[in-house]
Length: 187
Image 1 (cartoon, rainbow, N blue to C red):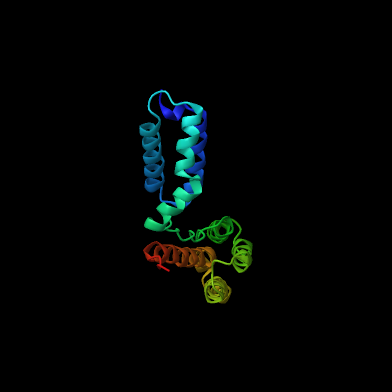
Image 2 (cartoon, rainbow, N blue to C red):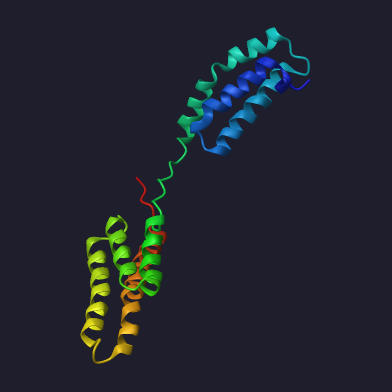
């Protein structure tokens, strides 16, 4: 009979595995396997409950085995938390409102998109001010040339949403690329 089938041994090995969560996965598996092999050698093919109890008493509590192994290896490295995503639903809605809203609902779309940009924490104040300028300038230019060149208005009004949408998209894409190239600091 395999010792892993013995109730006391199975319980001990389960407690050992649970206590070894601090160890790297390969070390945890090696510790459990090494302990199982040692118990198999000590108990033989037909272990009695008394013999199993004596062998487990010699090993000591599972926590002590883990502490011994931990002292040799050290704890598993802690992974740094993953930074939040650059693109959230608010940012997607902002860019879509600026871009599509500038075409579908010419002045209102970009204005609503700008309001949403101001409620997002992903853009800096400078980014938002540049987006405002990129919305306002084409609209002002369209108002100035409306009488002289009406066709220019049909080109300038959609730009009031498309240009800031492109700008804000570029800003977030650059931030995402910078985060992807960051080297996590050890410490």
